[in-house]
Image (cartoon, rainbow, N blue to C red; front, side):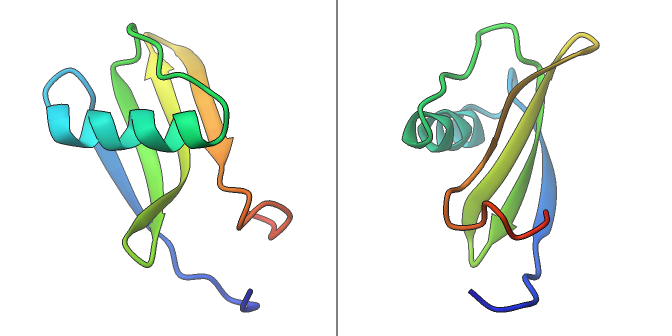
Length: 76
């Protein structure tokens, strides 16, 4: 892993964007979590075109927060 990782952050409206919702769900499944039905918005970190981190909101509650094992321990 490089010392410097350039991430792109995107806000995803999970109820409206079915394709990106599926991408978020697949990322979470890959790290042993499930995207909960009440999540409305997710903020995802992308590196080299792939999701490497994610956090979601259901109302004012943070849910479904994960970082890819590839970048864990990198100080994100």
